[in-house]
Image 1 (cartoon, rainbow, N blue to C red):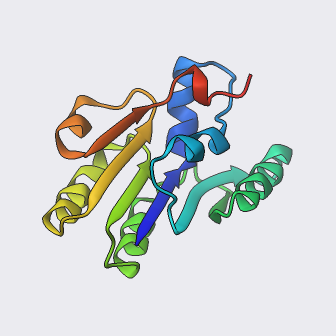
Image 2: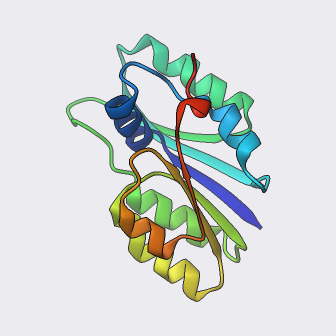
Length: 148
């Protein structure tokens, strides 16, 4: 079984560094994948006053993502790493995991998955070199994945 896990906060932060003010075309990312993940989960957070958040979540739901978003009150951001680890292990055995994140804290989890012969793909922007040695496939987000 395959699973795709997106850390939308990490993706947004890194996309905005390279493509200021642009948004990701998640549909293009799914089309580029060589596999169709059976389970797709997107994590994120938003402030209650953010009117675009609900339309973003709705768009992800239309692409069959399970959305796990947190409404921020006093926190500055949401770090979904623990939730990601739980979801990965609850869905074992897995053959393939696709992470939409360049968070270096995922590397120990990737090593554990590799020990279990799981194929790991990384999709992100400004992906650190450390991922290139542990992941099976790296997809660097470029203009092809940006909404014009």
